[in-house]
Image (cartoon, rainbow, N blue to C red; front, side, top):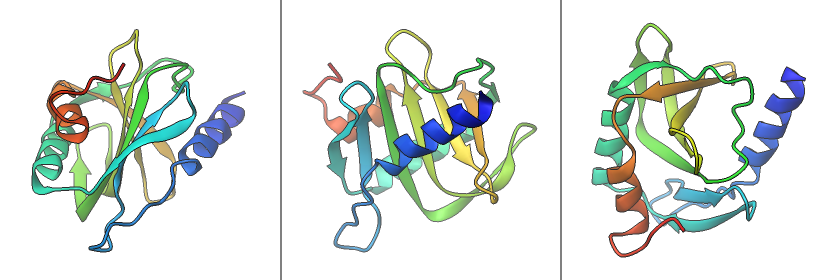
Length: 143
């Protein structure tokens, strides 16, 4: 069952189109879980990178539910350039991207892949409102 969930999650991640911006960096992608498609893309910028770093620094636990795959909501793939080291008692590795998971009826959480591509699901103290606003814009809402 656990392997099936992980395979399903990776299949969903692979459905993120690896779009590359003019600078050669992958784009930030907003994936709608219900639509099963990327609904917004934008080039990464310094503000998004700083906010992502701040979220990573606020990691304060692991996501403990059995099924980490949301049934609704959004997933946001954020490429990180340069790669970052995340070191705390729940995760210790270099990462070059992070995925924010934002279910509609639950608290959001983060997925990081270690150097062997094993997923780690973590929670952070900092909320994701600011980074989502930077990605989708002030006037837009997720729904």
